[in-house]
Amino acid sequence: MPALGLGTWKSSPGTVGTAVRTAIELGYRHIDCAAIYGNEAEIGAALASAQRDGVVRREELWITSKLWNDCHSPEQVRPALAQTLADLELDQLDLYLIHWPVVHRHGVVMPSVAADQIALEQLPLRETWSAMEALVDAGLVRHIGVSNCSAVKLNGLLPHCRIRPAMNQIERHPWLQQNALLSFCQQQGIAVTAYSPLGSPAAGGPLPLLSEPVISAIATAHDASPAQVLLAWGLACGTAVIPKSVQDARLAANLAAAQLKLNPAELEQIAALDRHHRFVDGSFWELPQGPYTQANLWDEPG
Image (cartoon, rainbow, N blue to C red):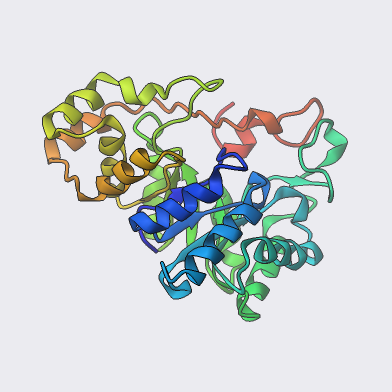
């Protein structure tokens, strides 16, 4: 899997297809998708056109997608994948992830009351995982993994795995470094992809990490952008990074970050920025009398 990919979360319909096509023409080969993003059909059309026009061959691409929370029941997993494959115009995914360790009643996209949620004790990840393994057996996906999973949840899942998770996709950037989780995954042979590697804006505002003084100073020293420094740091940590952009210049600049090498002193400066700050804090799963809290989602003290 190419370590630097294109994220498509929050990429609006009408712009994401053009962005994916441009990214492929620039040299991106790793595209990160998810059913819940609501844009897989447009991405699929872009992937198909790039292949049809001879820009790229299918075997050169790495396409990831994710199972949404309302399809965790084993009988719902394969139909959910079938819809994603149809939308992406593919016969096989390179990687399919369980998007969240959170379960909804089937057909409930975003729960508004606790009755729309199902506790993990009632439908544990291991049952969903068994159905994910069957997708590999069927040749529909090459690799399977998880997203937003703590070491505690992985420890609970691993003894039940016939096929071990290939990936854990987590929020990771200098303000949320999650080094203990990263170390655990590396020890277990589970690769890590960092989502929101540039942080995440509040209400469409600027990305605060881009104005972090330490990042800005390192960027100036390298004649690079702050975004490039953030991506180079993620790559230096041994993680994949999937920045999202729909702007041609930023797509090209983000891809060029793979060539930026930070020195040990700079990496040490960035390591000191950790403040355990989640932009995607999971509070949207916490409903009155519901089974999910931020504490039991992340397995951290509440």
